Length: 158
Image 1 (cartoon, rainbow, N blue to C red):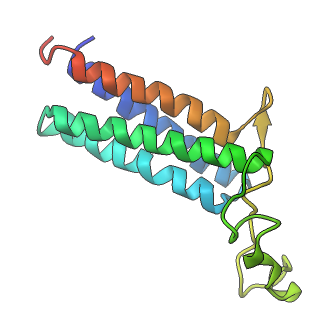
Image 2 (cartoon, rainbow, N blue to C red):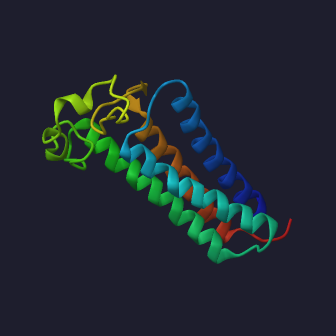
Image 3 (cartoon, one colour):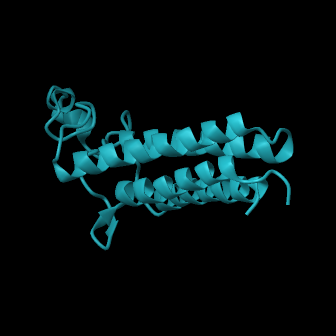
């Protein structure tokens, strides 16, 4: 495959993962703080891919796309560890976090219109074959990082 084809594939992959996250959100799976963090690198990879495909076939931008894919994979691995209890997560979105324990119980009630419901980062909202959304994102994002690296080594012309 050529440089452009691989960049297009990686860009479409990030678009699919980000789009899938929004579909899950529309289906009622509200994202937690770490879920939202995983979306930003995909958005960056999409912008970088679009720049490469429309304006500048730059290997530097492709390297940044690969770093974005690695970034979201890293956040996904971290989030998976938080969900599985392998390590502590941010205190602002975990059930054992001091940030949540210090809040008044009335603020956390679902009917309270003043506050969005708290979505905990250490609870698995959905899984398939034993892997959570964070785990799937990490796996697919690592594959996208490989595609970005392949793009760096691929010929630029068809």
